[in-house]
Image 1: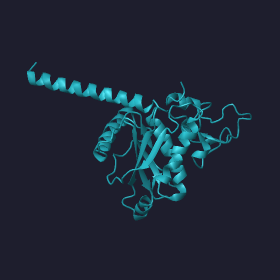
Image 2: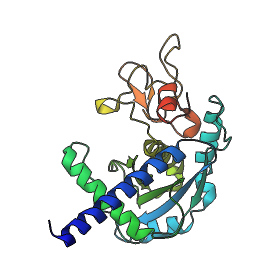
Image 3: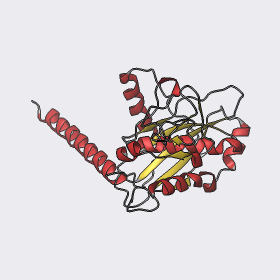
Image 4: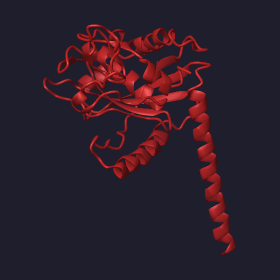
Length: 259
């Protein structure tokens, strides 16, 4: 084997080992909960430069996302974490380039992996700062103008890289439900899985906030990874805010809150 080819293979293997070690350290540190995770929200106008969306983004500040930190702090009290404040959320700079289009939930595994690689590279290009990403979760929020009957694309949180792509409506009256989606995707980045079945029905018992309640219906809160409040066997509603959501034991176990 030529010397140059051997050196190239050695460099590649060293790089891959370094990335694997970094990813493992990122996973361990982000799920140790010994100090707060830094959540940084990067707004994006995804509405082709709609000036109304730009106006909304200009009015954003840290207070809009404060309910996320309150939610995680309140929920953590049941699990005896070392850090009493699991997250610290702040508004980051506006990102002016669009990420690669996310695949549909029905897309094949290979398409999702390929998108994940492209998205991570886009993240690197658009946040090439010197801050450590060991305990920093970067949340890119694509805002669109609300339209009656319009549904947003699926949001995604990646558990390798601590990055999330959130779809949201640019309207003050939607802020609280936007925060639910952000919190949901943040939990994906630290290992939580979805707790809903097809057609967005909550899985029983892990997708129910109070699975031991008698009578079982109506439930009054949503398990955050199910995102719905079951009112009967076939009726559900979206929670109005994070105040109507909980982190159940199954999710707590996945994110290392329950040992």
